[in-house]
Amino acid sequence: MPLVTLSGGTARYGITIPFEGIPLAEQRSIVESLPDLGYTDVWSAESNGADAFTPLALASVWAPSLRLGTAIAPAFTRGPATLAMCAATLAAAAPGRFVLGVGTSSNVIVERWNDIPFTAPYQKVRDTVRFLRTALTGEKVTETYETFAVQGFRLGLVPPEPPPILVAALRSGMLRLAGREADGAIVNWLSPDDVRTVAPYVHEGGPGKEVAARIFVAPTTDADTARGIAKFAIAAYMTVPVYRAFHEWMGRAELLQPMWDAWAAGDRKTAVESIPDSVADDLVVHGAPDYCRERIQEYVEAGITTPIIALLPVAPAADAVKLLAR
Image 1 (cartoon, one colour):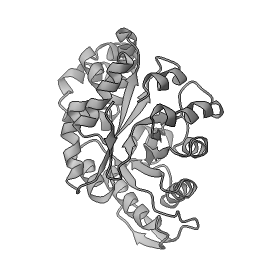
Image 2: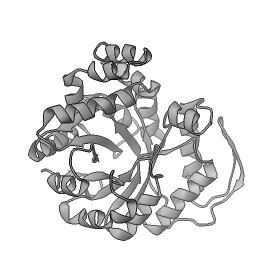
Image 3: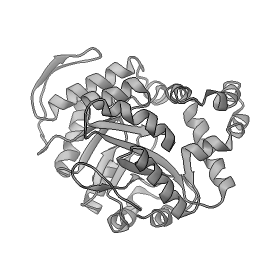
Image 4: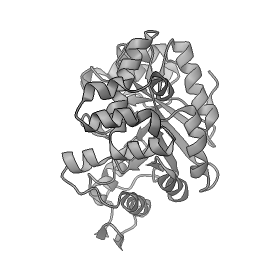
Protein backbone atom coordinates (compact mmCIF):
# COMPACT_ATOMS: atom_id res chain seq x y z
CA MET A 1 0.00 0.00 0.00
CA PRO A 2 1.46 3.43 -0.87
CA LEU A 3 2.40 5.49 2.15
CA VAL A 4 1.08 8.92 3.01
CA THR A 5 3.77 11.25 4.30
CA LEU A 6 3.51 14.46 6.28
CA SER A 7 5.91 17.37 6.13
CA GLY A 8 8.19 15.60 8.59
CA GLY A 9 8.56 12.68 6.22
CA THR A 10 6.84 10.16 8.49
CA ALA A 11 4.40 7.75 6.89
CA ARG A 12 1.11 7.55 8.78
CA TYR A 13 -1.21 4.57 9.21
CA GLY A 14 -3.27 4.66 12.39
CA ILE A 15 -5.76 2.57 14.31
CA THR A 16 -8.21 3.28 17.11
CA ILE A 17 -7.62 1.96 20.63
CA PRO A 18 -8.68 0.45 22.92
CA PHE A 19 -10.01 -2.56 21.04
CA GLU A 20 -13.56 -3.67 21.78
CA GLY A 21 -14.23 -6.98 23.48
CA ILE A 22 -10.84 -7.33 25.18
CA PRO A 23 -10.07 -6.20 28.75
CA LEU A 24 -7.82 -3.16 28.59
CA ALA A 25 -5.08 -4.81 30.62
CA GLU A 26 -4.96 -7.70 28.12
CA GLN A 27 -4.40 -5.55 25.03
CA ARG A 28 -0.65 -5.14 25.49
CA SER A 29 0.42 -7.85 23.05
CA ILE A 30 -1.76 -6.43 20.26
CA VAL A 31 -0.46 -2.90 20.78
CA GLU A 32 3.12 -4.16 20.93
CA SER A 33 2.63 -5.85 17.53
CA LEU A 34 1.37 -2.73 15.75
CA PRO A 35 4.70 -1.16 14.68
CA ASP A 36 5.90 -4.39 13.06
CA LEU A 37 2.58 -4.57 11.16
CA GLY A 38 3.12 -1.10 9.70
CA TYR A 39 0.96 0.97 12.03
CA THR A 40 2.48 4.27 13.07
CA ASP A 41 -0.30 5.83 15.16
CA VAL A 42 -2.84 4.88 17.80
CA TRP A 43 -5.76 7.20 18.43
CA SER A 44 -8.30 7.05 21.23
CA ALA A 45 -12.00 7.81 21.14
CA GLU A 46 -14.04 9.01 24.12
CA SER A 47 -17.77 8.43 24.48
CA ASN A 48 -19.03 5.97 27.13
CA GLY A 49 -16.07 3.56 27.27
CA ALA A 50 -12.46 4.30 28.09
CA ASP A 51 -11.40 7.89 28.60
CA ALA A 52 -9.28 9.53 25.91
CA PHE A 53 -5.94 9.55 27.76
CA THR A 54 -5.44 6.32 29.74
CA PRO A 55 -5.23 3.91 26.76
CA LEU A 56 -2.68 6.21 25.14
CA ALA A 57 -0.60 6.31 28.31
CA LEU A 58 -0.49 2.51 28.29
CA ALA A 59 0.37 2.44 24.58
CA SER A 60 3.19 4.91 25.13
CA VAL A 61 4.91 2.26 27.26
CA TRP A 62 3.80 -0.84 25.36
CA ALA A 63 4.93 0.46 21.95
CA PRO A 64 7.25 3.47 22.41
CA SER A 65 7.57 4.18 18.68
CA LEU A 66 3.86 4.87 18.10
CA ARG A 67 2.45 8.36 17.77
CA LEU A 68 -0.48 8.93 20.14
CA GLY A 69 -3.58 11.02 19.51
CA THR A 70 -6.94 11.80 21.06
CA ALA A 71 -9.82 11.67 18.61
CA ILE A 72 -11.26 13.33 20.49
CA ALA A 73 -11.18 14.82 23.97
CA PRO A 74 -14.37 16.88 24.33
CA ALA A 75 -13.90 20.58 25.01
CA PHE A 76 -16.95 20.67 27.30
CA THR A 77 -16.43 17.79 29.70
CA ARG A 78 -13.15 18.86 31.31
CA GLY A 79 -12.39 22.29 32.64
CA PRO A 80 -9.80 24.19 30.60
CA ALA A 81 -7.05 23.73 33.18
CA THR A 82 -7.82 20.03 33.64
CA LEU A 83 -7.73 19.46 29.88
CA ALA A 84 -4.39 21.26 29.68
CA MET A 85 -3.00 19.12 32.50
CA CYS A 86 -4.14 15.88 30.82
CA ALA A 87 -2.53 16.93 27.55
CA ALA A 88 0.66 18.17 29.17
CA THR A 89 1.08 14.98 31.17
CA LEU A 90 0.88 12.74 28.10
CA ALA A 91 3.04 15.10 26.05
CA ALA A 92 5.67 14.97 28.80
CA ALA A 93 5.47 11.17 29.02
CA ALA A 94 5.83 10.77 25.25
CA PRO A 95 7.79 13.81 24.04
CA GLY A 96 7.16 14.61 20.40
CA ARG A 97 4.74 11.71 19.98
CA PHE A 98 1.44 13.11 21.22
CA VAL A 99 -1.27 14.97 19.29
CA LEU A 100 -4.18 16.54 21.14
CA GLY A 101 -7.46 16.27 19.27
CA VAL A 102 -10.30 18.32 20.73
CA GLY A 103 -13.85 18.92 19.58
CA THR A 104 -17.39 19.69 20.58
CA SER A 105 -18.46 16.06 21.03
CA SER A 106 -22.28 16.00 20.90
CA ASN A 107 -25.33 17.11 22.83
CA VAL A 108 -25.88 13.50 23.90
CA ILE A 109 -22.49 13.17 25.61
CA VAL A 110 -22.29 16.72 26.90
CA GLU A 111 -25.87 17.38 28.02
CA ARG A 112 -27.52 14.01 28.57
CA TRP A 113 -24.57 12.17 30.07
CA ASN A 114 -22.59 14.95 31.74
CA ASP A 115 -25.31 17.49 32.57
CA ILE A 116 -23.39 20.34 30.95
CA PRO A 117 -25.17 22.82 28.65
CA PHE A 118 -24.19 22.26 25.01
CA THR A 119 -24.18 25.94 24.11
CA ALA A 120 -22.03 27.88 21.62
CA PRO A 121 -20.04 24.80 20.54
CA TYR A 122 -18.04 26.61 17.86
CA GLN A 123 -17.03 29.37 20.26
CA LYS A 124 -16.23 26.85 23.02
CA VAL A 125 -13.81 24.93 20.81
CA ARG A 126 -12.24 28.12 19.47
CA ASP A 127 -11.68 29.46 22.98
CA THR A 128 -10.36 26.10 24.19
CA VAL A 129 -7.79 25.98 21.39
CA ARG A 130 -6.68 29.53 22.12
CA PHE A 131 -6.32 28.77 25.83
CA LEU A 132 -4.42 25.53 25.18
CA ARG A 133 -2.04 27.22 22.76
CA THR A 134 -0.93 29.52 25.56
CA ALA A 135 -1.20 27.17 28.55
CA LEU A 136 0.80 24.32 27.00
CA THR A 137 3.84 26.59 26.62
CA GLY A 138 3.93 27.06 30.40
CA GLU A 139 2.84 30.67 30.23
CA LYS A 140 0.54 31.96 32.95
CA VAL A 141 -3.00 32.47 31.69
CA THR A 142 -5.34 35.17 32.91
CA GLU A 143 -7.92 35.68 30.20
CA THR A 144 -11.64 36.20 29.73
CA TYR A 145 -12.77 34.31 26.65
CA GLU A 146 -16.26 34.41 25.19
CA THR A 147 -17.28 31.06 26.73
CA PHE A 148 -15.14 30.86 29.90
CA ALA A 149 -12.57 32.74 31.95
CA VAL A 150 -9.27 31.56 33.42
CA GLN A 151 -7.60 33.48 36.23
CA GLY A 152 -3.93 32.92 36.96
CA PHE A 153 -3.44 29.34 35.73
CA ARG A 154 0.05 28.06 34.99
CA LEU A 155 0.99 24.46 34.26
CA GLY A 156 3.18 22.87 36.91
CA LEU A 157 4.26 20.18 34.45
CA VAL A 158 5.29 21.74 31.15
CA PRO A 159 6.00 19.30 28.31
CA PRO A 160 9.34 19.57 26.49
CA GLU A 161 7.41 20.74 23.43
CA PRO A 162 3.74 21.72 23.13
CA PRO A 163 1.76 19.02 21.32
CA PRO A 164 0.07 19.78 18.01
CA ILE A 165 -3.64 20.48 18.36
CA LEU A 166 -6.23 19.16 15.92
CA VAL A 167 -9.89 20.11 15.90
CA ALA A 168 -12.69 17.67 15.20
CA ALA A 169 -14.67 19.26 12.40
CA LEU A 170 -17.64 18.46 10.20
CA ARG A 171 -18.89 21.52 8.35
CA SER A 172 -17.21 24.58 6.87
CA GLY A 173 -17.05 26.79 9.95
CA MET A 174 -15.27 24.30 12.18
CA LEU A 175 -13.11 23.07 9.30
CA ARG A 176 -11.89 26.61 8.71
CA LEU A 177 -11.29 27.05 12.44
CA ALA A 178 -9.20 23.86 12.46
CA GLY A 179 -7.04 25.20 9.65
CA ARG A 180 -6.83 28.74 10.95
CA GLU A 181 -6.18 28.30 14.68
CA ALA A 182 -5.09 24.66 15.07
CA ASP A 183 -2.66 22.36 13.31
CA GLY A 184 -5.35 20.62 11.34
CA ALA A 185 -8.60 18.71 11.56
CA ILE A 186 -10.02 15.34 12.51
CA VAL A 187 -12.92 14.24 10.32
CA ASN A 188 -15.30 11.35 10.75
CA TRP A 189 -18.12 9.40 9.08
CA LEU A 190 -17.44 10.43 5.51
CA SER A 191 -16.59 8.89 2.16
CA PRO A 192 -13.48 9.53 0.05
CA ASP A 193 -15.55 11.79 -2.19
CA ASP A 194 -16.66 13.74 0.89
CA VAL A 195 -13.00 14.30 1.78
CA ARG A 196 -12.59 16.28 -1.44
CA THR A 197 -15.30 18.63 -0.16
CA VAL A 198 -14.08 19.09 3.41
CA ALA A 199 -10.26 19.08 3.14
CA PRO A 200 -9.93 22.33 1.15
CA TYR A 201 -11.59 24.28 3.98
CA VAL A 202 -8.82 23.14 6.34
CA HIS A 203 -6.08 24.10 3.91
CA GLU A 204 -7.43 27.64 3.67
CA GLY A 205 -5.54 28.09 6.95
CA GLY A 206 -2.20 27.51 5.24
CA PRO A 207 0.07 24.71 4.02
CA GLY A 208 1.12 21.67 6.01
CA LYS A 209 -2.15 21.12 7.85
CA GLU A 210 -2.91 17.59 9.00
CA VAL A 211 -6.26 16.08 8.08
CA ALA A 212 -6.86 12.91 10.07
CA ALA A 213 -9.88 10.70 9.47
CA ARG A 214 -11.43 7.99 11.58
CA ILE A 215 -12.41 5.41 8.97
CA PHE A 216 -14.79 2.66 10.05
CA VAL A 217 -13.59 -0.69 8.70
CA ALA A 218 -15.15 -4.16 8.72
CA PRO A 219 -12.66 -6.63 7.19
CA THR A 220 -15.07 -9.35 6.07
CA THR A 221 -16.39 -10.64 2.76
CA ASP A 222 -19.81 -11.19 4.36
CA ALA A 223 -21.43 -8.06 2.95
CA ASP A 224 -24.76 -8.62 4.68
CA THR A 225 -23.13 -8.81 8.10
CA ALA A 226 -20.90 -5.82 7.41
CA ARG A 227 -23.80 -3.71 6.16
CA GLY A 228 -25.95 -4.71 9.12
CA ILE A 229 -23.31 -3.57 11.59
CA ALA A 230 -22.65 -0.44 9.52
CA LYS A 231 -26.32 0.53 9.42
CA PHE A 232 -26.70 0.07 13.16
CA ALA A 233 -23.73 2.41 13.74
CA ILE A 234 -24.96 4.89 11.13
CA ALA A 235 -28.37 5.11 12.79
CA ALA A 236 -26.78 5.69 16.18
CA TYR A 237 -24.61 8.53 14.88
CA MET A 238 -26.66 10.17 12.15
CA THR A 239 -29.63 10.82 14.43
CA VAL A 240 -27.39 13.03 16.60
CA PRO A 241 -28.02 16.64 15.49
CA VAL A 242 -24.40 17.50 14.61
CA TYR A 243 -24.05 14.46 12.36
CA ARG A 244 -27.48 14.91 10.83
CA ALA A 245 -26.56 18.48 9.89
CA PHE A 246 -23.26 17.28 8.41
CA HIS A 247 -24.89 14.71 6.15
CA GLU A 248 -27.58 17.13 5.09
CA TRP A 249 -24.71 19.42 4.07
CA MET A 250 -23.09 16.48 2.27
CA GLY A 251 -26.29 16.00 0.24
CA ARG A 252 -27.61 12.81 1.87
CA ALA A 253 -30.85 14.26 3.22
CA GLU A 254 -33.09 12.43 0.75
CA LEU A 255 -31.32 9.11 1.34
CA LEU A 256 -31.44 9.40 5.13
CA GLN A 257 -34.83 11.04 5.61
CA PRO A 258 -36.69 7.70 6.01
CA MET A 259 -34.27 6.76 8.78
CA TRP A 260 -34.75 10.08 10.53
CA ASP A 261 -38.55 9.80 10.26
CA ALA A 262 -38.62 6.27 11.66
CA TRP A 263 -36.21 7.21 14.46
CA ALA A 264 -38.34 10.20 15.42
CA ALA A 265 -41.37 7.90 15.57
CA GLY A 266 -39.54 5.58 17.95
CA ASP A 267 -39.22 2.76 15.42
CA ARG A 268 -35.54 1.92 15.73
CA LYS A 269 -35.77 -1.31 13.73
CA THR A 270 -37.31 0.40 10.70
CA ALA A 271 -34.83 3.25 11.04
CA VAL A 272 -31.88 0.88 10.67
CA GLU A 273 -33.51 -1.10 7.86
CA SER A 274 -34.33 2.05 5.88
CA ILE A 275 -30.67 3.02 5.43
CA PRO A 276 -29.71 2.29 1.81
CA ASP A 277 -26.90 -0.16 1.13
CA SER A 278 -25.20 2.58 -0.87
CA VAL A 279 -24.90 4.76 2.23
CA ALA A 280 -23.42 1.90 4.25
CA ASP A 281 -20.95 1.21 1.44
CA ASP A 282 -20.00 4.89 1.21
CA LEU A 283 -19.38 5.43 4.91
CA VAL A 284 -17.97 2.08 6.06
CA VAL A 285 -15.10 0.22 4.42
CA HIS A 286 -15.84 -3.50 4.19
CA GLY A 287 -14.71 -6.46 2.15
CA ALA A 288 -11.59 -8.57 1.76
CA PRO A 289 -8.46 -7.13 3.43
CA ASP A 290 -6.85 -6.15 0.11
CA TYR A 291 -9.98 -4.24 -0.90
CA CYS A 292 -10.14 -2.54 2.50
CA ARG A 293 -6.55 -1.33 2.14
CA GLU A 294 -7.29 -0.06 -1.37
CA ARG A 295 -10.35 1.78 -0.09
CA ILE A 296 -8.35 3.36 2.74
CA GLN A 297 -5.84 4.51 0.13
CA GLU A 298 -8.71 6.26 -1.69
CA TYR A 299 -9.14 8.44 1.42
CA VAL A 300 -5.43 9.27 1.31
CA GLU A 301 -5.58 10.16 -2.38
CA ALA A 302 -8.60 12.38 -1.66
CA GLY A 303 -6.67 14.41 0.93
CA ILE A 304 -6.41 12.50 4.22
CA THR A 305 -2.92 12.71 5.68
CA THR A 306 -3.57 10.36 8.61
CA PRO A 307 -6.00 7.48 8.09
CA ILE A 308 -7.18 6.06 11.43
CA ILE A 309 -8.88 2.68 11.22
CA ALA A 310 -11.82 2.23 13.58
CA LEU A 311 -12.54 -1.49 13.65
CA LEU A 312 -16.11 -2.70 13.55
CA PRO A 313 -16.75 -6.00 15.37
CA VAL A 314 -16.66 -8.55 12.55
CA ALA A 315 -13.44 -10.31 13.60
CA PRO A 316 -11.32 -10.56 16.76
CA ALA A 317 -9.17 -7.45 17.07
CA ALA A 318 -5.92 -9.43 17.08
CA ASP A 319 -6.89 -10.96 13.74
CA ALA A 320 -8.24 -7.73 12.25
CA VAL A 321 -5.06 -5.73 12.88
CA LYS A 322 -3.09 -8.41 11.03
CA LEU A 323 -5.58 -8.59 8.16
CA LEU A 324 -5.33 -4.84 7.63
CA ALA A 325 -1.59 -4.56 8.24
CA ARG A 326 0.26 -2.31 5.84
